[in-house]
Length: 282
Image (tube, rainbow, N blue to C red):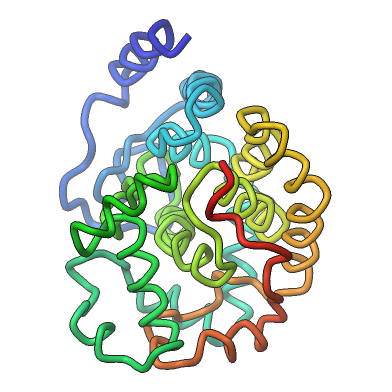
C-alpha cells in the first residue's frame, strides 16, 4: 500500500503551485492568490488539498511514524480548527504573547547546557531527560529508546508548514508540532505506539484537529491485545479527562517556564499522573 501511494504523492508535489517552496519570502496576513505567504509555503487549490489529504491520510494510517504525512494531513484538513485555536491564543495573555513573538523550539534555539543545569524535577530538566531517553542528546539515549520500541525524537524533526494559506495559522500549527514533545513530558508518556496514541487522544480533546482525531481512533489498530485493553480501560479515559480539564496547552510559553517545577505545572493545568507506566507496552 505504501509503495503504491508514494508515486501518487510525488505526482501531487509536481502539480501547478507545488513546484518548490518559497525561500525567505516576506510574511503576509492572508492569501490573495498571488503566491507564497511565508518561507516553505506552497499555494494549493481546494482540489490539490483534497488529494493531498487523502494520500497523506492513507500513508499516516499505514505508518503512524511518518510525521511528514501526518504533517500534510494536519495542514490540509485543519483550517477551521486552526482559526479556533488562533482565537483562543489571542484571548489569552500568554498565548497572545506567543503569537506576537513567534518563539521556535529547535536545537538552534534551545540552550541544552542551561537545561542541564536546572534543578531536578523542573520542566526544562525533565524535557531534556525526555530527549535523552528517546534518542536526541546522548548515544546511550538512542540505545535505550530503541530497546523500548520507541522512535528517536529531536526538536529538529518537525516538518515546516507548507500548505496552510494563512501566515498566522501556519505558525499556530508549527507551534503545535514543536510543543508535541512537551506534551509527552507533561503527560509522562513514552514515544512508543501506545504512548503516541495516548498523547493523540489528549491532543484531540484539546485541539479538535482532524489529524489528532484520526490518529486517536485509528492508531489502536496496530496495538496488541494487552496494550489495547489497557488503552481502552484506563489510558483513554485518563487522557480525555485531562484534556478536557486542562486549559489550552498552546497558551503556555514553555521557554519561559523551564525553571518551573513539572509537578507544579501539572497542578496548574489540572493534569494528574497516568494510571500506570506504559514504557514497557507497545
